[in-house]
Every structure is written in structure tokens, then in C-alpha cells.
Image (cartoon, rainbow, N blue to C red; front, top):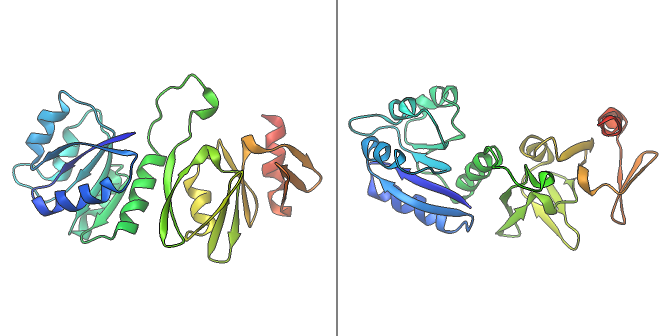
Length: 231
């Protein structure tokens, strides 16, 4: 579960962000703050995972507020001012949403923030970097557990995400997943395929077997696969 607060001086912005978050079951609302001072007081006593942050606020701007934090959660900026985007990324924010933004764009920002979260220790080290995210496909959003993915296949401008007993077609291309998924768990083995490393059963010649399915190894990706044997 990812906990979040909203910092914005506009009540309508709070309503929209919370409405979007309520549609994503892995997000847990903690507080609405209407200025940076209120947020600072809350964060002095509480820790959260994610902040939705407006920039143009009284007393302290959003970025001035960020600079006061010694222990900073993930931050998604929500603003009507595009000219401050570069400064935001210099402050290591997760994403910069320009108002008004769609639910689809909002979900992309959430996925980006959560996939780069510092992960808390688990007793099972293999699950250390697993996370959940949402995929748009078939006119609905599917919640995906990264540890359930067997492999991903390019499908024109889309992709197919394969699981043990199912497949989901995503509106994102394969390059998106190559950048988005953690390198310690996933590997590009072909221009059209990304595989989950821990799901490999066998490597035979130029073929990787995952369950009863064959994934080809591309000529330019053989060195990626060879690195697995030296780990």
C-alpha cells in the first residue's frame, strides 16, 4: 500500500486527485493540506510515501517547500505552469502533471513514482524490487503484479504481457517497459521480447524456455543473456 497526501490551495484539485486515487486500490489517502506550512506540520509527525504537490501556493511555493524537507517522499507535481518543469526534475520529482490532466496520464505518473520507490526490506530477498502498477487495455485498467509477469512481447505499437494463465494487451510499446521495469528482474533478450529472469526454465541455443513457451534470443541481445551465467 502506498500512502499519500495532497498539497494544493484549490479544493477542486483535492477532489479530482482523490477521486482518481480512489480508483487505484493500492493508494491510501492520509491528509489534504491546503498550504505548505500545514504539510510541514503533518510530516513532522507522520511519514508517507507520495506527495501530490501544487506549486503556486501562499506563504511557501511548492518547490520552496520541497527544499525544506530532509527526508523526501516521492513527489508528483500537479500544476498549471509548465515553465517550472526543468526545476522540478532537478529536484528529483517523479513526474510533472500539467492541469488539467486525464486519468490515463495520472496513472502513468503513479506507475512511474511507485516503480522507483525505495523498497522496504522483505524477508524474501527475491521479492525485494517487485511492485504493482496499472495497464490500460481492453477499455479498462488492469492491476499488474510485476512478479506475476512471465515475459512481454511487442505487438505492433502495443505489447502483450504474458502470465501463467492469461495475457493482457497494453497500449504502451515495448520500449516503455524496457525503461520502466527493474533491470535486476527483467531482461531484454530480443527487439520484441523482455523476459522475467526468475521465470526462466532453460536456455537452449537461441531459445529461452519459460513454462512451456519459447522466447527467441535476438542476435544483438546474446551478450545480455550470457551475463546471466556469470551472476
